[in-house]
Image (tube, rainbow over all chains, first blue to last red; front, top):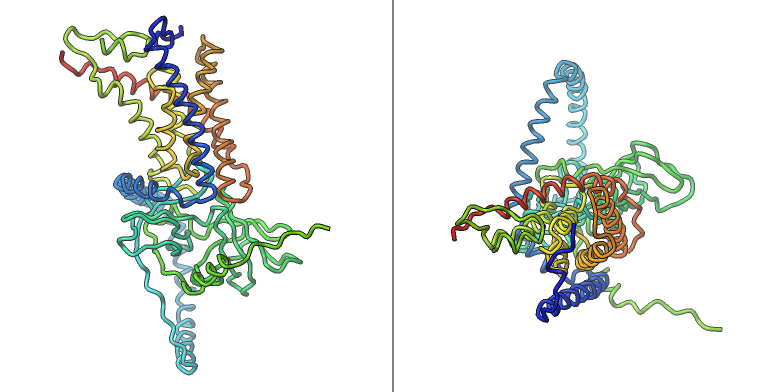
Length: 302
Length: 183
């Protein structure tokens, strides 16, 4: 294609200056962008107000999308259920028989548990969830893993609160707007969750790998006791996540930990629950000590 | 006159005698299309890995290649800022990369003036690869953790989907020049 007339100003002074100004603004745009990038690298929350208002604008779009997602999953699930109805029926009948036997045993244990707790004088209160919401968006084309919730500060959601789906932990709130909140998913590398193995309480932590997988690392290194299929639940240390929420299932043990997949895939969750922070006082105390701590000692020069 | 001016110097559209494209549509539709593509993150997909290609950036390249003078050289500044609001990248990364891509396209235009489909695709693929690599780099800096290179499948998908996106841009371009205004 031949060069456009708009790029050949000829003798028109006005056109020449116009083209020149365009280039100046474009180069200024690159420089301005670089400055903003540096600012947001050092202070990630610097532009949260802009992101929150943008999320508010896009909220209706996301809510409509979330409803279609749930509806279409229902359709596919129904079709799939028809295809293997016979085999499933036989399997389920066997499972129900086993479950009935288990349920009787469980009831006895539960009653005993209640009696023992009364004896010990422990009053256990399950925290009430702050809000139930839909996931209305996610950063599907970026390497960071954020999602947007359909509730915000007007429903009582605030920074730091954990979010869980039916199957397990999803992430925690990092920015809030009036009716939307941005959450950091467990699969983001910035999100480190203290966990323990559900079977024996072996402590460790889980860090996202940004590719949908997560890394499970153990605190006591040495011989790696992990096996495929180990389930990890939140341990409650750190004070943000309440204990006992499933986080990950180990799939590939390696030298000092394992690679795993999420216990609850955020794309399968119709609704998610925003929970109160487990120990808000502990978290704020930790933050205060981090702020008050003196800078790390510098190496002494010989 | 409007049809001629905003056709961007390429094929002139033949209009009925007393009709012309509406100015608002002829100028605003490319901006609107790119901005809507940036909002694709509010789609029904909740991804746990970077799977979606950078649609708004592909749309920008598509418009830039189809109508080289329709978007001003500085269009990367506002469009990149808009993309940053939705993409999850640290704010500023889209501004730098979109503006840089517009300047790079000027250089490509100056060096390779006569391009066909294959050369356009090649240029698009090169710019997309640079965009995805640098975005992942910026995101890794923001996370403070060297991200594993997870952009392979995303890059492949983006390169394969680039020609269809340019076709979509071409369809929108026909809508843009519909003679709706009565003179």
